[in-house]
Image 1 (cartoon, rainbow, N blue to C red):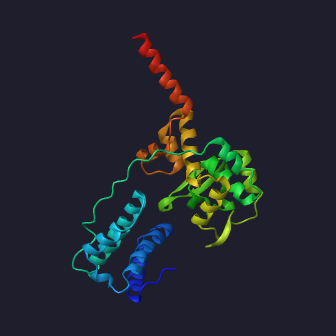
Image 2 (tube, one colour):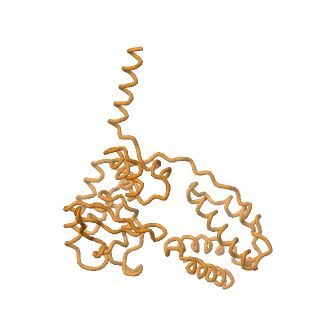
Image 3 (cartoon, one colour):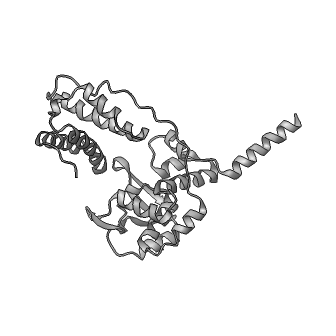
Length: 277
């Protein structure tokens, strides 16, 4: 539990109200305010309105974060202090000159078949359904934890699952009879009930899946798996983009990995061409 001063609590509370008014999703608001609480906890004796660029640089420089995490914290700090400046709490925005964070392009890491098969053998029915949904739909763990029985629907083409993604964007995903039947067998309400507005948190959902998969495989690697296999069918990157709920095709490209058999065929073709030459 982070301990922050009344001044920081008041400032972050007012900012959170602003974010709610702007329609930011709950998950996004939680992340942003958590980042500021971390900063406030480390600067308990400093007024939020007395923060300087030097404070921000010293704090961020001493954190051993992954590039994606560092970029996310930078965004949170910039959004908070931009708001503080606009509201007249500060004469200037100390976060304006925070250096841009470059995130190296990471290779996708799709979970292999044997890992998925082992995960589906878990005795925990709840976790087995989590893994089945993730492998069949490629949804995020934050979307998975909020799946409700009413999200299962049927149209002219068959069964679908309604998913609320980032920014509140809704997408309707096709699913097969096997997954639809597994969902139907669950009690009404949220498929994975918990204490966060009636359902499990994204973090705990991810932890349960990781435990079942073991060896460092995660819910996110199941998303990579889905993306790579879906792309291999017709090489339709736009279709995969819609299925994953990405705003940009470039993001989808990061998730798709050329499957080993395709790479072997490509390499073999190159060797044949070299021999012919």
